[in-house]
Amino acid sequence: MNGNQGGAAPLNSLGLRKSSAHTRVVVAMSGGVDSSVAAALLKEEGYDVIGVTMQLYDHGAAVHRAGSCCAGQDIRDARLVAARLDIPHYVLDYEERFKAKIIDPFAQSYAMGETPIPCVSCNSDIKFADLFEMAQDLGADVLATGHYVSSRADESGQRALYRAADMTRDQSYFLFATTRRQLAKLRFPLGDLPKTEVRALARRFGLLVADKADSQDICFVPEGKYADMIERLSPGAAAPGDIVHLDGRVLGRHGGVIHYTIGQRRGLGLGGAGEPLYVVKLDAAAGRVVVGPRAALATRVAYLRDVNWIGPGDMEDRAKEGFDLFVRVRSTRPPAPGALYLREDECFVEFVHDEDGVSPGQACVFYESDQPQARVLGGGFIHSTVSACAAPALSAGT
Image (cartoon, rainbow, N blue to C red; front, side, top):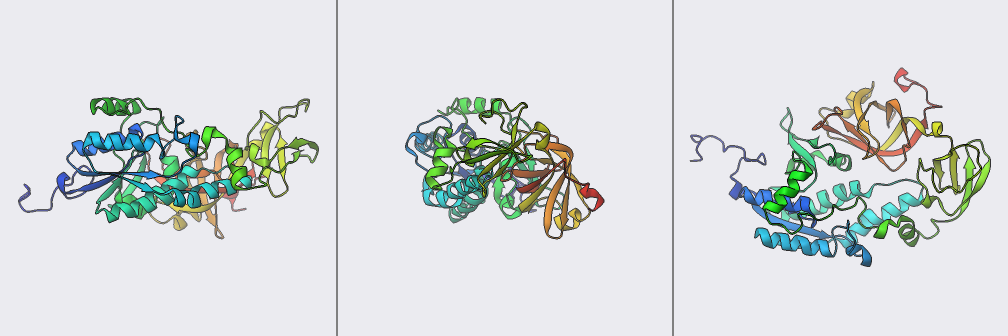
């Protein structure tokens, strides 16, 4: 008997009707403090925990620099943490997959004048795909990570994704591409904890990574030298061209569009222009960097590709007439009010308040509200934008 008079077993802390001892959890261990504490918490609760670390790249100096992950010292740290917790630990060589799925597309996107965010693709195409399958091969009931997000059952009984309780650590922007199928098997033990408590737990568990620095967003770029890596992977990406004002005037020359980002002001080499100028567009096909006044950065509409919906109901039905929600176009910005539309197979967001520096390649993530622990509704990648100066009111049906 299970203590409830022959009825269904009670839910454990992971939402499964099994005892902790009979619930196998594979934990993605990067070698950092967050995933290490996630493994330690699950082990303490009596779960059958297996640690798995992915070796994703090896760029020499990158494996030793602070802020890297999934290589060199980080793999050694993960192995030592697993030994401390007395759990099995496996290292998976995913270097070829990572290069094909993440690094090469990142370089190609940058060469096209976009500002890609490879962390989204790493989560959706490597951690929650290849590693997901490996977890199933190991007989795991769920896959757990150290991300600062939460998942729990919604009104329909399906697992849904929610922002972290600590908004300063919230990583939901990078997880919008997670599918409903993946969410059913994913767990995030740290979603309701502040970082200070996570480090305190690491010390209580006696983990050597308790004070280890956090990893950087783009872990595979040695010393943050994007241009060097991109030109190596995409020869010719740094071809020089003109710096052109919005009014058509040629103001100078540049050493490659890969050296610029939307919204950039410093380093343009346009002294004496008479007004502060910002990068407002990167025309990689023509080899042009387009600049203009700050007002030209204001964006009213963003068109999206590869849209993923994990909110309640059906996106198509809700977005035909416009669906009010909150959106983030940068991981460093709070969610802002907007409306989602789907018309003639085009998906786009209209912002209530103009957004500055919206760049193709970035993510536009949908939320139910702008509050902590708000539900994540999905999102997509920005492929083009409409300036506030030129945008009609799309809500009027134009």
